[in-house]
Amino acid sequence: MGAIERLLKQLLHYTALLDGIGVGDLEDVYKYFSAVYLLQAQAQSLIDIVSRAASALGFEVEGYIDAGGKLARAGLLSDDEFNRYKTVVRFRNIVIHQYAAVDIGVIRRIIGKREYREVAKIAVKLVEELRRRGVDP
Image 1 (tube, one colour):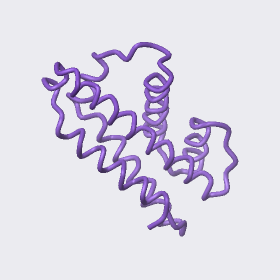
Image 2 (cartoon, one colour):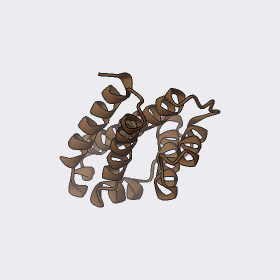
Image 3 (cartoon, rainbow, N blue to C red):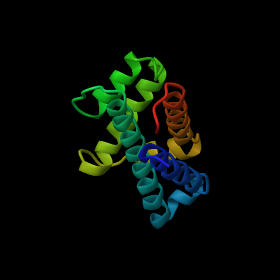
Image 4 (cartoon, rainbow, N blue to C red):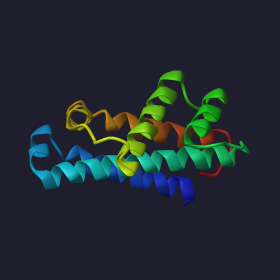
C-alpha cells in the first residue's frame, strides 16, 4: 500500500467516525471538539493526498491550493471539487492557526448535512484517477 492509499484509508476512517456524530451531540463540549478535530484531520488527509498526487504527477506547487489547482487543470478535479477543496483548506487553516474562532454554526451545518462526505468522495476519486493514469498511489 502506497502513501496516498494509506492517507485515503485514514481519511475514510475519520469519515466513518464523523458519521457517528449528530448535530445534537455538538451540545456536549467533548463531542464538539471531537467533531472539530475529526474534520481537521480529515481535511489534512485530503490536503496531503492532493499534495502527494500533484508531486506524483510531476507538478511543482506553491502551497496547498496551488496543488489542487494543478490537479484541476490536469482534469483530476472538477471546478466544483476544486472549489470544495479550497473551502476545506481554508477551514483547516482556521482550525489549526486559529485565524478566527471556529463558528459552531459551520460545524453544525457540516455535520448536519454530512458535507464531510464530499471530502471523502473527492479523495476516492483522486486515488482512482491516479490508478487509471498508471500512478501507484
